[in-house]
Each structure stands twice: as C-alpha cells, then as structure tokens.
Image (cartoon, rainbow, N blue to C red):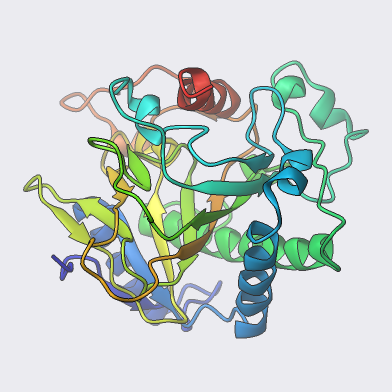
Amino acid sequence: MRSQLIPILDISRFSSNIDDASRAIARDVDCACREIGFLVITGHGIASKITDDLDEMGRRFFDLPESIKLKYTAKGETYYGYNPMESSSLAYSLDKHEAAPDLREAFASCRPDIETGDSFFRREAVKDLGYQINFPTEIEAFRQVWTTYYYAMSALGARMMQIFAVALELPIDFFEPVLSHHASNLALFNYPDQLKKPKQGQLRGGEHTDFGSLTIVHSDWAAPGGLQVKTAAQKWVEVDAPADAFVINIGDMMARWTNDRWTSTLHRVANPETSTDQTTRRQSAVFFHTPNQDARVECFPSCRDANTPPKYKPITVGEHHLMKMGKMYEEAQ
C-alpha cells in the first residue's frame, strides 16, 4: 500500500532570515516528524548531475566481478568499504536474531577526505571508528564522484538541521557545535534481481530504525521492492516520491534529543513481487547524517517537564553508533 501519510514539502523558500515562509516550512516539518518521522523534500537545490553520476558509478562498481569488489571489503567494526551480499542484517540492530541476513550489497564511507591527523579524531571517544577508506581504483573518478555527492548531502543535512532547530523553537545555529567534526556516512546499496526465492522472512533490508540525527535517501523510486514505513496503526506502507526528490527520516539521536516528541520510525526494504515481468534491481544512495562522535545526546530542556521526564539516559553519539553497528554484523559473519 502506497502511503498518503508522508508529506511532500518544498523547502526552497526556507531562509536563514527565518521569515514567515521559513516558519511555515518548519511547522510542516515538525508535524511530519511528530506523526510519521518521514518526509519527502523537493526544492532542495541538488543538481541532477550529482545524483546521476553517483547512480551510474554505483552500477559500474556493483557490476564488477566479486573477486575485485572483495578487495575493498570493510574491516573491523565499521562497514566502511565493500559489504558483500548477506553479510549483515539490519534487524539484528533491534535484537531480532531470528532474521535472515539482508539481500543487498553495499559500499560505504565516512568523510572521504577526512584528515586523520586532526586532533579531534585522535580522541578516546572516536579513535576506534576506523575512518580510513580504500576507494576502488578500477572505476575512473570514483573518489571524485563520491566526494562530490557526499558534500552535497552534508550541506543539505546542515540545512535540514537548521530547519529542525527552527521547528523545535531553538536558535537556527543550535546544532552547529555538534556538527563541527561530523562523521556522517554515505552508503550505496545494490539490491540485485531476485532470481531465487528468499529464505523465510528474508528481506532486502530488515526492519530497523536509523542511528543518527537524520537520513537522506535517493533511490529508484519506481523500481519494484522498495522502502516501507511502519505506521502508528502498525501497517507497512510504501514510500512514494518524485524522481528528483529526497526522502528524509529521523534517526535515534533526534528522537532521544526530543524525548520522542519526534519519531525514529521503523522501516525496511521489501522484496519485489515475484510475478513482476520487469527487472527488480534497485539501487539507493543513503546519507546517514551523524553528529560529532563525542557529542552528548540528552533530552532538550524544551522537551521535558515535571510531567514528562527524560526517557533516556545521556549517551554519546559514538557509543550508540558502535553498539548498533556491532549488533548488525555480529551474527551474519
């Protein structure tokens, strides 16, 4: 069932001057984040060439022989690098250990031009996150295309955080201090044609919530077998979006900051219908916007009172992120 609950919002008129149009956009975002935790944005200003170049490059990479892709396999407790088919399960992050590994492969990175000599990234809270990325050399300009897309999403994420601040009645630059050394990550996911029946309960991406502040998704929205969101009525609905739009959803960090005023909603990537006569391959670019790894996440004063105490203990972004990532991979290896 396609959703009528996820609003499509044009953010082109949002201004740092916080005029009436900006406040109206922020109110609409607040409403979406309270009710469903998802929204579709247009008027974002991202050139189609940036998304087209990444899409084309991603397909070229995933079409490489497995032996070549495996040269770039992610190491350690992060997933930065290549992740083969069925190497993880998103549902494990919710302790759903009966779930089968996900039917997808991925390439992911943290900040592509990160300076590991920066003293911030030598701090105890962040030093074990494994920032070094080995980018494929078989595809010309892979790193350049990747970096261009990454920083376009970084800028869009910063703009969305400004909108979030206004929506939460905070100063527009409220989140800037915790984004100064953000470790947001970008992942390309390939969901191949399903040539054999999945295992019982196996999905392209198991149900989960995202870990960071917000997620920005660009995908083949018309391709079969895509993103689904679980509503408050406990029904799964498909996300529908214009071809040039991005889907935004709230992650765990924003839910914790707002004391669940905003919803980190369960979602998954469904399998395509078995009866379809078209290709079911699907590719998605997903930017997981994540604050500084040593940022302390605790309930905003405006989201608690005597009748609504904080639901969560304070935690750092890095602590939460490593816990969730560790669960994703612990049983799929």
